[in-house]
Length: 213
Image (cartoon, rainbow, N blue to C red):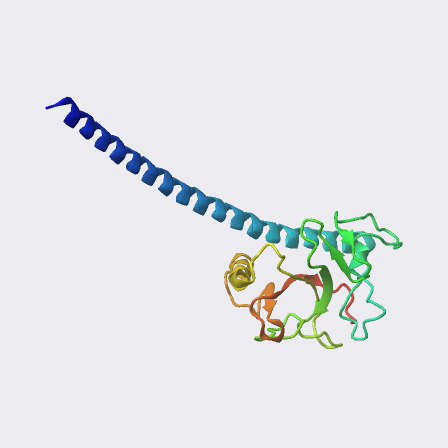
């Protein structure tokens, strides 16, 4: 074998090795990118779950400390919207808040989580009946003869793509209610005006303290 042919073979082998190495690195990059995307999605998913739980604990602690229901908004004629701001500031006897490290919004029925301030959190009253495939902005209103519950109400944040929000809402239903559907259980979803890219999320906390609505 001549020196020239030997060098040619070495060059060819080097080129093959380089292509193999590039293919391996490319595959690793794809795998790493996929894993990173999955991790980020899990973080968003867990963050939403934790926010529901934070809000729930705040509401329960407020009720335990004050031994009174949240007051209704004076501007809300139906009485289902409650003064969520009470979780951050109040003059009620027994109040030991603030119960959450959230922000005021200028409205007495909405507070914001500074980690995702696009949408606010509301405290509302609805029945625990099945709501059906609801395209309204709320559930079934309480009456004098119905059981009435506190529900947290919010939207999914801007960090979740519109095309992914229906799937994301479905995953939350699996976590909270074992996937029993959006119209029943502790966790529910309304599709306002039929828009599947902007679900309104509801989470049942506890019954109203008073037997009179």
